[in-house]
Amino acid sequence: MLQDERVTHADEFHAPEFHPGPLDPAAMREQYGSAGLLEEDLAATPYEQFDRWFAEAFASGLQEPNAMILSTADAAGRPSSRTVLLKGYDERGFVFYTNYGSRKAGEIDRNPHVALLFPWHPLARQVIVNGTAQRVSPEETAAYFHSRPHGSQLGAWASEQSTVVSSRAEIDAAYERLAARYPEGEPVPVPTGWGGFRVAAETVEFWQGRENRLHDRLRYASEAEGWRVERLCP
Image (cartoon, rainbow, N blue to C red; front, side):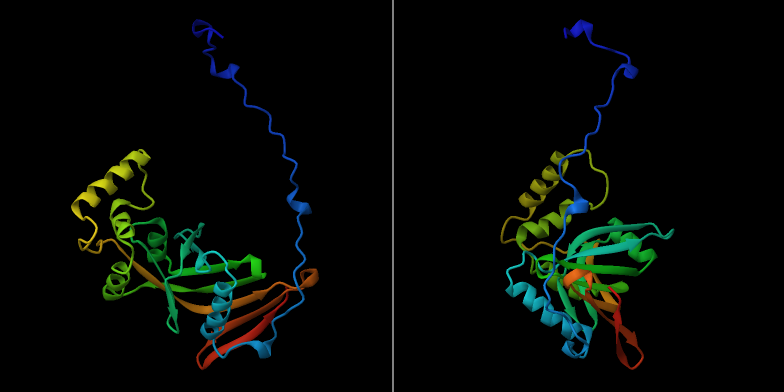
């Protein structure tokens, strides 16, 4: 079509029809193995049990076994989810780091109830944590920040996480300015708006896939005197 013959009325443009592809997700089925998870197999606390499964996930060669889906909700109860990386855990909870100006941090500040999901699909396992999140100390944040690669330290400064930006070039330019100011080997200060959250678990579910969708689901629930273990129907 010649340039002077271009259509100028928006209502003359039609979106292409949508035709489903050949893949049918309803027909996708994976038969899980028969190895199960019994109450007598569990450690005394969910953190000890997580330690066992986390080590097995790492030993299996699973890519980024510390990747977990963090779900939060705003003050109106609207949920949001994203993948973050676990950077520490002990009897106090599970720790990750983020920009405190991000959406997730803002939602946690207003509603500290969160969920974590470790999706270890190749092992037919999941770990699901429900609990409350609170900020870690500045000292703990600083210790972790300075353990990060130099480029990641600069990246924490360059990105105002979750805010709208005009282009990728703007982000890259911010990074280059920081790289010139703090070259490799030069100490990088901890950003004032960046740090960690610790999720103190209220319940931790260990999910093991079984044949015929009759999965094992054992959940630790926090009690005043320790932890109660309960089995859930699959």
